[in-house]
Amino acid sequence: MKVSVILPAAGLGTRMGREKSGTSRKQFMLLEGAPILIHTIRKFLGCPSVNEIVVALRAEDMDWARGLIHKQHPEKPVRVVEGGESRQQSVENALATLSPETELVAVHDAVRPFIDSALVEKVIAEAASTGAAIVGIVPVDTVKQVHRNKIRSTLPREHLVLAQTPQVFRFSLLKRAFEAARADNFTGTDEASLVERLEEAEVSVVQGSDRNIKITKPSDMELARLFLGEELAAAGKTAS
Image (tube, rainbow, N blue to C red; front, side, top):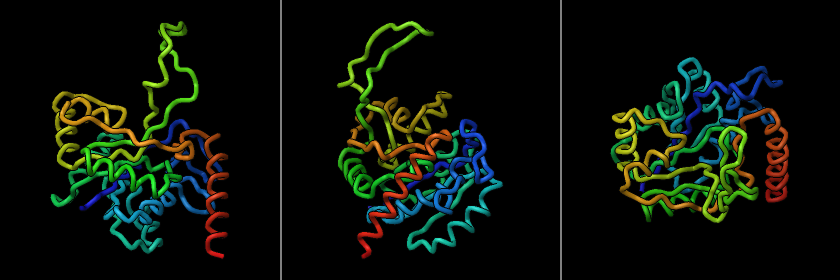
């Protein structure tokens, strides 16, 4: 079974501001000397089920990113393609470059570097069985539906999940979902929202992790440094 991973990484990081690394592009901010994007790529290189990784980038970043990736000496193919002005366009551009032999496609936020290999394998296995699966967590806070600043209702948490990534789909299903979205001029907030519109397959949810954070604002970097320190310490204990 051929599994391709798409990492959309063409965003401008407008919410991040400018960090010590000298960039506001969150995917290129440094954690222990390596860009967040590289940490994320490393996680998928370590997943047995993953056959290739495709990174969608802005045109001006492609050569630089190729150099960074080359220095990792990846044991699996890691390709870069030109992304679009939106996440949806970036993923669609990457989809167009996949081999017809691809069976499953996993889309993962480039700025979620703490995804666990076992969780990746679990959501891939679920999608292989059902055709569509995402990672998600149940909210711990009470969720209110509001209009402007007035509460309209309280939503029962047992019927809610906070969607994370990876989101994994049968290749043919995801292609049809993107084609339909383009035809209808529909923009979704994630890949699952495009697949849901087709009403061809139910999307399963695999229990995610609070550690699978998406780095989007400066305060997230402190937590990222803590998590990375813990991972490095655990790896050091395992090696010894």
